[in-house]
View 1 (spheres, rainbow, N blue to C red):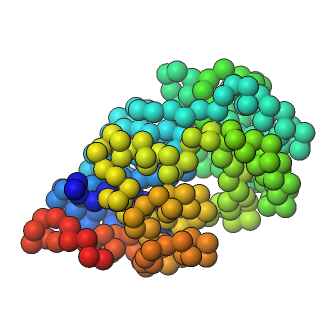
View 2 (spheres, rainbow, N blue to C red):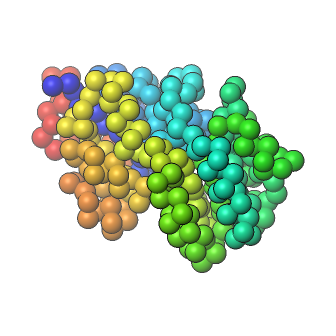
Length: 289
């Protein structure tokens, strides 16, 4: 059997509450990667953000970004697989969002590079996000003349940012109408409390589907998998993996589905769990945690 494959979510799981990888986690993770650890990321973040936050890590496996919309090379950012929403469904969703008075952010790939289009900043939650990306000099951000402009590319995600109560009916509508075509998530932004993100991806764009595609590329199997998560968009990968590890700060639904619970993200629970498997003497993993 091949060596174990470890896959971690980022926000609320591997990263601390400010969205950073601790110096301890960075040092220990690099040491284990150099020792042969098979480790990668499955995140709702973009490859631009993932590469910035994890710069300097010796990850040599592809990463799963945008909840499985892309499988991408960590070192170059090149997309190895794209799971985009069909143009017909994208057009219908845009009309549905407009009927609820919402203007989404649209993430797409235009054939050459990733783009994140917005029409206007409609509330403080959106202002925070766009401002944060511009502060980080994120090259994807573009103010569109019209949101239809973004539909010319391969649309991978619609994002609506607003208060939870304004998004609940819209979430239910999208789930009911497009249950066979898309994945819908409604999650509070950890770094902008009180503001919720409604994200819409293609049905193939989920962490479990991304992981299955990754295992085909790497020769692993679900029996080899240990995954780490904290939030509802991690449930499907928890159902897939042999070992599903919830961090101590995880949502109750995640802890209920976990095979193991480790320390919180502030305690570097992911790293300490992997260290429990690592055998420095043998330079491998004992798999007994």
